[in-house]
Amino acid sequence: MDLGNKIKKYYKEAELYNSHGLLNEALEKYKSIDGLVKSTRNIRNREGILKQIALKIELTSKKLQKLDGVKATPEVAEDAQSLMKEMYTFDDPEAKGSSALGGAIALAKFGQYDKAIEELNRLLEYDKLRLEAAKNILWCWVQQNYTDYAVSLYQKWRKNKLFPPEEVDSIQAYFTELIDSAGGDHEIDELESQRTVEPDSEIDDDEILDISAVRFVLPRGPKEGEKIELEISFQSGKYIRMIIPRKEKDLIDSINPGDLLKEIVFYSPVAIFSGEGYVSSKNEIDAGPKKADYSLEIKIIKIVS
Image 1 (tube, rainbow, N blue to C red):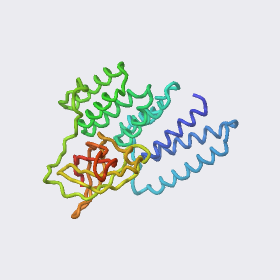
Image 2 (cartoon, rainbow, N blue to C red; image 1 turned 90 degrees about the vertical axis):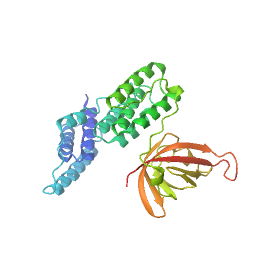
Image 3 (cartoon, rainbow, N blue to C red; image 1 turned 120 degrees about the vertical axis):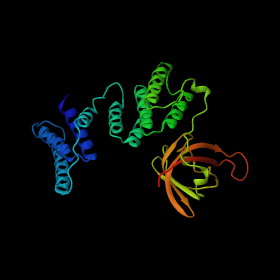
Image 4 (cartoon, rainbow, N blue to C red; image 1 turned 30 degrees about the horizontal axis):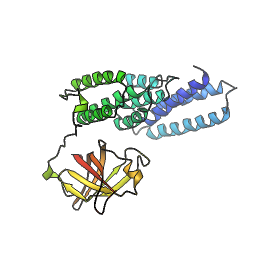
């Protein structure tokens, strides 16, 4: 590994340690970079790199000083350290984004499932990474006990022919084993003839208050990550329906049937509570005063607080 790549690798590791609160490990890596750069004269932008690393060392040292006597910096387990150090060994010069795959898998192993799924979804567009990304997405959902949703997601992939024929058997064998090891009883053979599985709700219809509006984060599209609030136009127990005006095309494109919304805020005249929901349908209205607007239906599957 040449010096430039080694510095980049150390910097990525240091930033990862820092983001997990592993300040001693991060400081050690920053100091290693400082030593490497100082020992070499012919590095491009040498002074700029040294200033940036010096600032990182200063900020990390100050964080450690603040924590001293208050709480210990988290001690990283040996297997976790190994995983962090190896997360960038997934690099493959012929497969763009393979380093990101390594990072996403590391996030998943540390239990940061939402962030891992977000990163893995982006990698589905790469032919050489799609299979591994998809397997890890399914693993993340099953680990969170969302096996129904994992089956639904896989069915959607199969229906949309996301995988070429040579990968279908591989992912199906993996997914079957994954479900078996989790103690599930789902059948995923002959998925094309099956109706997409909708996650079961944990609550009864009579336990749901009347809901006037919801707020949630958009999972994709031009407005990905943006929080939006929609008024409820109709409610039947755990199913709520809202109207999206036709002019809100970016909003319409940002949510699809089959999406699992894990952080929804529900507004009721008597309370505000949060939970999770499944997008059961999104249809264009073809008649009446709302013609060409969209009807969005969400099934409430869990109340968190």
